[in-house]
Length: 171
Image (cartoon, rainbow, N blue to C red; front, side, top):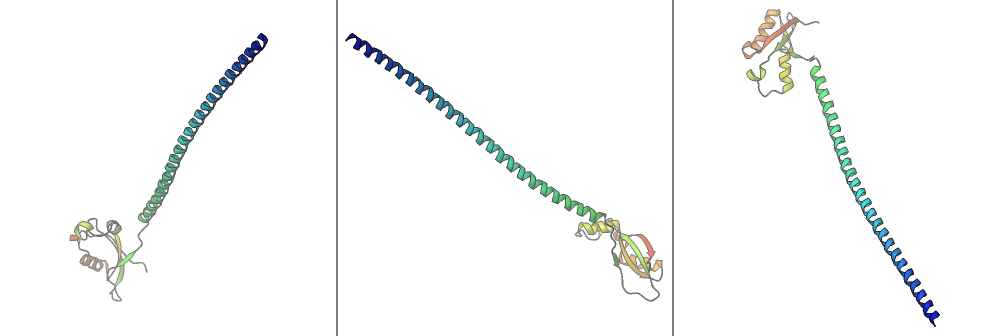
């Protein structure tokens, strides 16, 4: 009977040892699962941070592209305005179309640097600039003296007008 008791004790001890080993393995497995879940959560947080950064960078890139497009448009507009300012004004204004057969055509360049102050302050910038550079007029007169008289009557020196040049019109 002792043998049965001994065998029972050995069996119970073996069973207790196996149970403690199984419990230990369960605890280790649970700890590994907890670590894996913690690593997974950390990885999820890193991915979320990277996604937020990527989204922020995407927004910055889109805004930068918009600014670039706006700047390119502004540059094109500015270049167009510069080309327009650099272009030679070839217009000829006709002072008076009435003339006789003996009258000659004279090209007179008239300027007025103080046009805004003395004549018309509401004139637009391109027109004011053309007065500063000088406008060309076709004036009819028997000679240069008569042409100058007509110009002086229409554009008096008292209002700031000056004759830059006068030359006979080429036919």
